[in-house]
Image (tube, rainbow, N blue to C red; front, side, top):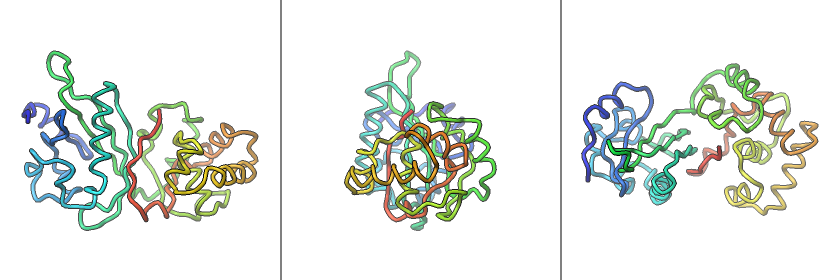
Length: 240
């Protein structure tokens, strides 16, 4: 396993959020203290040389998905944004947006991946999220979810009252998922998802799926994480 550049390690240590890097085989080269606490390690140096299969929390259940994501980043030489919902250290359920980018050496050769996790679980207000939603109208803003810094866990939130399933469908729809992909994630038929999407169009008085997405974002629904998502582990790639 390659050793991480000490300057890069110091850089990670100074940044907010959970930072670290892995080599090309998804072995951890380094992680900062925030990530060590998140994952349940006593010291952040303890992660060096381990893999996602060796973590002391329930994220091990998605270790193979994490490795595939790493290989996708390396193979395409392109960053990925991933929504991760898991019981982390102490069994506490949290939602994170992880951004994975290629780790390059001095000759621009890809030697692994850098990851950064932003906690989107516990923000206490939704006003900023609603404002950002209005600024970032539409789903074409590639970094809109990364920039989004205020979320709320509340199935009763919003001017338009949604059922739990409608809320879940809207959550994924805003983030670029197709009806087929949402059906696979939720374990439902595509026809059922299409029914929910049509119900959402009616509730938001939207003329199309794009109109539905624009209206829901402008009303602050980008800031909402459906409560029921915290009943199963997720690690899904978010489309730019």
